[in-house]
Image (cartoon, rainbow, N blue to C red; front, side, top):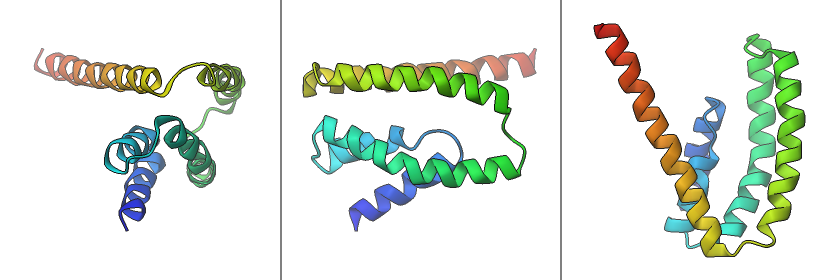
Length: 123
């Protein structure tokens, strides 16, 4: 039942375009006891159907600049292959640290963006 709840919450977040892996991976590792590399592998498999469903809806809503998406997608593919190759040489603990730093950095960025937006409105 717990895995169903994790999937549902991360699916909702994925549909919004935020990235359900930010919820899915920590939930699997911290709350479910899954190894970091396994959780990241699950996230990749999980991503395929959720991305397709979200993509269909966003295309119908005309929320996608196809030219930009193709450029980003091509270089993202290169990065994904490189990252997958590197994880075979990185231990589970180091991978956890790298992912934690990444999430922390995103959190700081979001807080700063909200602060800047509020400051600009109050002028």
